[in-house]
Image 1: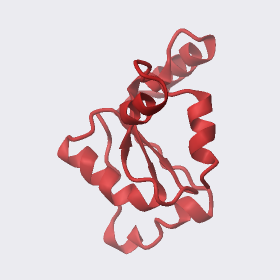
Image 2 (image 1 turned 60 degrees about the vertical axis):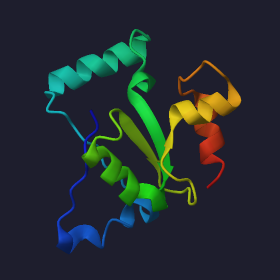
Image 3 (image 1 turned 30 degrees about the vertical axis):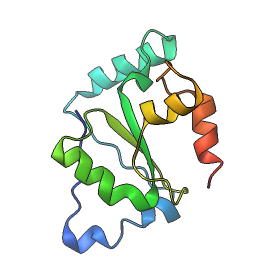
Length: 119
């Protein structure tokens, strides 16, 4: 399940700071710090692949559509937003991967570099 970001109207005008100031917004499903540390340890040990829950990517200008998709349940996994990338609509990982490597829908470092190079 995705987590929508709710920004109070008086602060919505400052959302641009995600792109301009390198601010990161991280949602939580209510895990404790201990739970999060356990997950981090598993990722670092290679026993947990965090990309399994990544469902889509989007550029900064697609944030409204991404939030709406999460809120409406059209996206069940996580959405990675690339603040420095404009013109990238909300795009399912499976659609990106199908075009490049049929049958492999896992997000990789190479995919990350390809998207980041659009900035």
